[in-house]
Structure formats: C-alpha cells, structure tokens
Length: 111
Image 1 (spheres, rainbow, N blue to C red):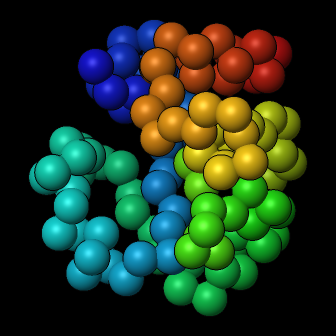
Image 2 (image 1 turned 45 degrees about the vertical axis):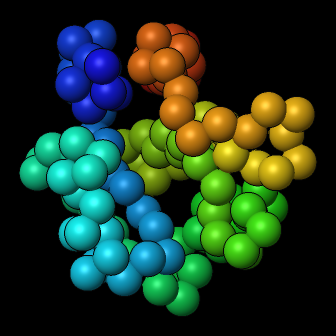
C-alpha cells in the first residue's frame, strides 16, 4: 500500500506534495504508472530553487537531482523533520519506503 492511501498516514492530517525537477509533461506521463492519486500535487522545481531552499541537494543523485527525500514542514513553515532515502552515498539507497516507517517518523515529529 502506498503512503497516500495508508490509513495511518491519512489519520495524521498532513498534506503530501511531490516536488521534482521534471517538467510537468513528464510528471503527468508517470502519474498513472506510479499510482499517484489526483489529490497529490505534483510541483515542478525546474530551476532547483525549492530544492536548494530545503537543502536537499546535499543528497543529490548522480544526475544532480534531489534523491528520495522527505521533508516535514509545520504550519509555520519550519522544517521539523527531514530524511533522505535515495542518496548514492547511503549504503542501501531506496526509492520506496514502507509507509509505517514514514508514519512513525512523522507522528514523532508532529508532537
């Protein structure tokens, strides 16, 4: 089950947003392939400004793009938790994270 459909994630009442360098047309082409529901915004960070602002490029993959990084931002815009899973510097970079693991991190950092 994917994060956005995981009942424990839905109970947290947080918004999920995908931010990528990929143009909107490329993102739209894979929405169905990845099973991304229509309520998940797919934002384009073409110039990398958002990625730099959240300092996620320190974990960039070999192409210079952000890896698979999760950032939890509170209602005041403050980063309260950040974790990267896709960096090539990690011993076992992954592109899929078990929703229960993410929910646990999010829940602990919302308190």
